[in-house]
Length: 396
Ligand code: PLP
Image (cartoon, rainbow, N blue to C red; front, side, top):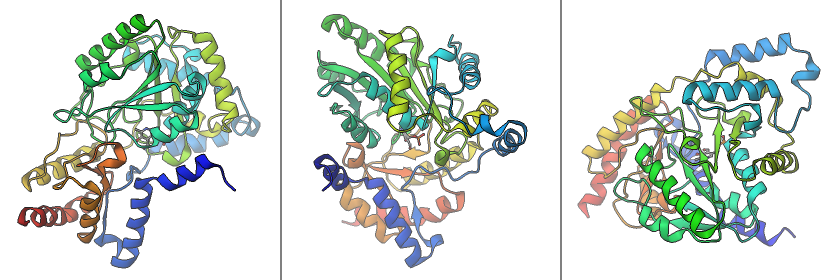
């Protein structure tokens, strides 16, 4: 008999994965080109040539014992040093190798952080709408999710509700910038205000409140939008990063965690993170791909394609009457559904061969998510379906 906790996890499933599976069934039935599957954040563009070259070079040049062997649980020291230097060059920070832990993607970075800092019952604040997997990550360590209501106007931070939700039991706050599912990028003013509130509450409750910034979309911004580097604004910050989206390598499971020396209890935390990386079963981040990303730190896949997709889709959808905050990054859009029941709305969308994900999956009902990391033809061919869906509801 499996555990009670796992029974619940299976029951709650992942609506995103369920829609993805449904999309595959629809594709078999109607033909792939006749189904517009916007369910999964799986990059549609190939990794840059430098990734392939680095793989071949490393395999040719390095002794096999090194590239395929165990190493320090935190990752190769030369790679961590290069990653730290690259972050410093891009953001004017001052990190060294002991501020970087190579992880199994952003998911690994979040999990080792939570494993290290959470006691059962600790509260962790999430801002709706948020990436639904956070609930599962918190449940791994018996943390209690405390959900801040959405700021419907900008999909930034609802500061009023945030202040109310911080208590002496708050251990951490998770933000995701740029944001999945809204595509919003938090401004510097928002980050400063967030930091100010956290400082004030730390003093008031005489506790450490850790900010965990989940940033797999940091490089995916439109119009040269800048994404503030959060460790500069609040010292108790961890940053989780991943190469899944920027280098189109989600299956290779490679990312890192930034652990600033200024964190409260830094030494203990660093030790804990290394242990967490090992005992959660990862042991270390994939060996070959640590070496590969170290050779591609300034490269990205052809990300401008996502901006093109966003422009086409956003223009068309707003013309058809959809209400939506314009994304400034990522490859997601989060329009309002025409009816309050977003699940019924997404079911109806299937009749028009559109596979989209209900907002309630992201703790924000009445909306739906479009993952437009698909090829341009899928976007163009889907427009008629979005139009018909809008007309269906306008006729009611
Ligand atoms: N955080 C957010 C907001 C995501 O959207 C994703 C993946 O889609 C992840 C974390 C997990 O990223 P990774 O595949 O790099 O572990």
